[in-house]
Image 1 (cartoon, rainbow, N blue to C red):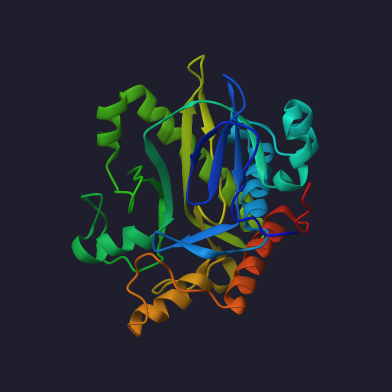
Image 2: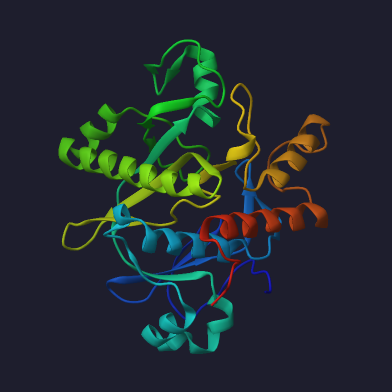
Length: 305
């Protein structure tokens, strides 16, 4: 499959993000197209990672169809033939969208990331080390990096167009959206996480944390939207290597992060755009990781359609 850095389709472009292009189909539908772009440390690399966009789209489609808690969601179709049938103007662009496009119901996105943390890692671990808190609320003392939270914690965050999201409390979400919608977001997010975690455990995978996004459709229904439980929105750890008290190996873009972190340590990159070139070996190993997590979760190799 040819790597795709960007698409240019015969539809109005709504926005071009770090990874996805969003096109308008009509008054009620959008087309989300995941490129093979990859970002690290909030900088988009020049190189494309083959199959990455297809993995993100097809893993999301897999979870949409598998998880009971995913209903209702925004996905109408992720198969290229079905998309072309619904949007005939894309017929000449089937190869460009194959595997990486999703036809969706348009919603009004909720202005918070719905993060669920099952384990103490990432920004939560960083804050805990500094103050023993998460979003300013105190956690139990004596926790180690990668320790499990039992039960999992709903840990919402603001959506940042530039830079990092900021962890906030449930009370902050409730004050902004109202207690009823905030409770819906929390309860649905936790249900999704628990259901996915139970399934992933059977496949030898720990979902350390993940973030969900929701939107309200024209009828006011709360729909699960965007990408779901992908390597870009979640931390997936191999269950047989789990050892609390340190960081864990993960199925994601870690080869890119490790390479760039090494450059920063040596003073060879300042962490800002423009990014340094990625060696072919780093691109290849990252692509293999994305395909591998799809195979482990879905039980079959990635088949792009």
